[in-house]
Length: 132
Image (cartoon, rainbow, N blue to C red; front, side, top):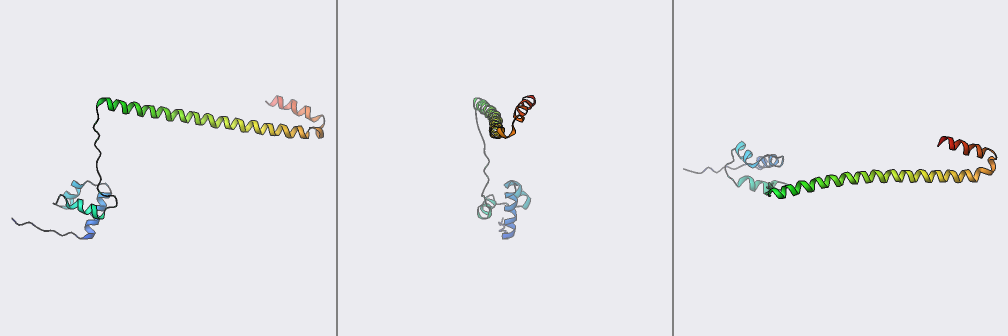
């Protein structure tokens, strides 16, 4: 039996590689386009692809390791929530400090303006007490 030597155009090769980069599997592409050589697509990907071959990650772990990973993930989630609470508390306290500083500034202005207002200052202080 004679072996058929098929030559693919560069445009065709790039199209197949683009499909691979878009997420298609090597086996699916070989079947779709009738490419018989196992290493053919790999050579094209090496030559034309931006990222190269995708390698699948297989994680083998014991039950204890899986429990540890879940425990650590739960701890991370808990810490992220604690950080969020602390951040909100910090913002709240900064807001209070800014408000107190503004009140102090307003009080200072009132003290400096008090002599020119005369008896009105006592009325303002009394009204301020009612508002607070």
